[in-house]
Structure formats: C-alpha cells, structure tokens
Image 1 (cartoon, rainbow, N blue to C red):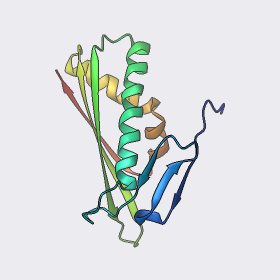
Image 2 (image 1 turned 90 degrees about the vertical axis):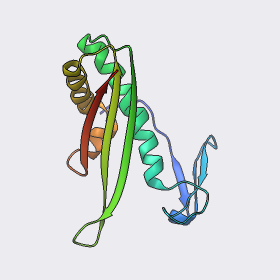
Image 3 (image 1 turned 120 degrees about the horizontal axis):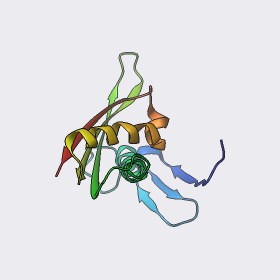
Length: 136
C-alpha cells in the first residue's frame, strides 16, 4: 500500500489526561465519559474523524458512480461497551442525509462509500456498524 499521508498524536494520562497532535495544530484535555468535567473523550474524537472521513468518501464515490449528489451531511454515533469476556468494544451508527438523490440512489451511495472510507475499512469485522440514509 502506498501511504499518502501520516500524522502522529501523543497522549499522556489516558482518559483523564491530554492528547495532542505532534505538530501542535490540535490538542484536547481528555475526560472520562459522564464525569461532568470539561474535555473530550476518545469516542468523541473517533466520531469526529469517522464522520468527516465518511462524508468525503460519499463525495468521491458519488463522482465515481456519476450520481447527482448535491450535498451530504454525515453523523456518526460511537458507543463503547464491555464484552462478556471483560474487554471493551466500540459500536457505530452512521446516518447520512443526502440532497439530490432518490432513496435508492442514496442507499447505493452509502453502501459503496462504506467500502471506500478508510475508517470503515479499518473497523470492518471489528465493530458493529449500522448504516442509515435519509434524503432531503
């Protein structure tokens, strides 16, 4: 695989610490979900990245499929839960709202984009991902 881009982040203190991109362009204080403290948690950061990446995959895929996508809005909900074995696992719900497409075209697009998106490819077979489509 040819690598087009690499970024690096460093975290200290785990879920109650701090994480930052090594180039200094972005940083977050981290908090445990439900703690009431100000900051972000890894699931929120994952949801942000997945939503942006999937939305880009929609645009690219629509062009390849020659679909008249006039706009899209992608929301990703990331959940975390404990497995029966005691480990932890993520769960994802992806909801895409499209403009300019029929419901059938939108469904075709979201399924094709799920095959293209790097986040989808990284998580395939590892977490449950559900795809939802809405048309405007």
